[in-house]
Image (cartoon, rainbow, N blue to C red; front, top):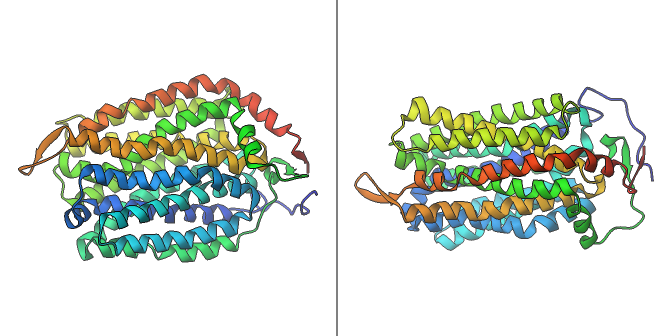
Length: 439
């Protein structure tokens, strides 16, 4: 099997042009907006449904635990099924789950629907990232992943902003339900995408004589040294990013003397601007420095993660000016950390054979979500045990909680520095794999 005859390249983005990337970015945007609206309306939701900060943190834990449980099955499905149909079906279920959150009357109902959103993300994410590697050649893959990886963070910011605006106008229930509508349209767009042969953009077509077992796929992926390092580092980085997205609005209500609507708009704006600038810059720099430095993408990710951690730590110190110091530092810190995502995703795609990319991204998703499941609840638990007065009421000190956990990203940065020596060797081994034959 050699796949279809190649067609002329339509642009420097390769045979398929920009359209698949735009649609795949919309998939990530819809998912992230759905997830981002709940932090925006969280204080109002807590007041009506009556649950604690720890229970609030568990809402994000439910989302991510479901993603953990389905991460590897989602990756295996991406390696076996039509990725377009898989993603389209999940988008419809996402939209339904979001509507049900807006109709919830009990805490457990919100908890259950958040878990359903996490399950959908675990299935769609490996499929989307695998498709990006098959649509786009190495020369532009960093930029392609920059847009695809930055969109979820942008979506969280956008969901927070839109959710805050709708909260002020109509209340939290309308804010949540209104966010669900675009998912159906995006599902139709995904189904109409062309389906590239696996490995096509690498100048090779993945050929299977037999379908490997799930266990053999997992073993083949975890044997890659650079990927093992990346699994741990991504887990540490993702844990803090998850907590920042979930608790950002509540933090500014308590520590920056902002109203709920102001905190949603300001907090969402900080994430949005930082993510756009950092994510795009990370992809561009990744493409420019490749081949000049050994393990360049992993080195870049390590440096920007360490710098971003320092900026974020300072931004959570007590007593610093909000608009002139805290918010600019948080925007820079988020931008730097998010700029690590494109190079890390490039590495994940290229150190395994093309027909194992779905499994690879599924396992990365599993490890990334392990700390992401724990960290928001841990932040809430630490805050519950270190109280401060906010408008005469005792509230958890979220700033202290963030400062107490920020150091884990420095561990991730150190792991990336240690693991970058394996990247070039593992990339060459993937291209030589028996599963790939010259196109």
